[in-house]
Length: 234
Image (cartoon, rainbow, N blue to C red; front, side):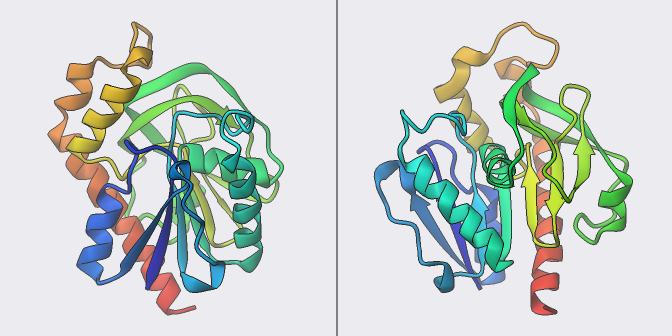
């Protein structure tokens, strides 16, 4: 299987998605759209991952490639291929589906719990989820739930944390792909956002979380295993 990742900045890379892909024997194609790389033709890959980034979906003037990316994501969704958006990626998916993307009341930065909805438990996406999982966040914006989408998870700071649209388009406001180096990189490049606030952790708290990292990656791998199983039976 060929997996296509759209990367928006050098410091937010596929992380643990690459580990899973290599272990499963899949090919991972990365388009560094910020560097002017061309998006791969839709017929040349099987899954699309839209990664995170510090920009807003509304920043087309500063990042003109956002216009091309939005058109591409919309076209991919129409093909009914598997699409997974992470943080900015989830916001882009919501945006092209006609939902509003806007500043959240609180910034959410660090390891905080999400609560899974009944829909997420009933759908074969996250294997045997408990009612709550601690995951990594770094976002100041949120989105309305797109029409015909199902809410999968919420947190105290942000209601719409995850959704599924139709059967194969999934938006995750949080980061399951983070590894230790990924956390270090985002702190190095976005650390000016760290302040004293109810849902912002310190650098030390974010970096000293080996158990959370391990559990988050296991949740990612289980999710990807479930997607792969669905793909093989489709």
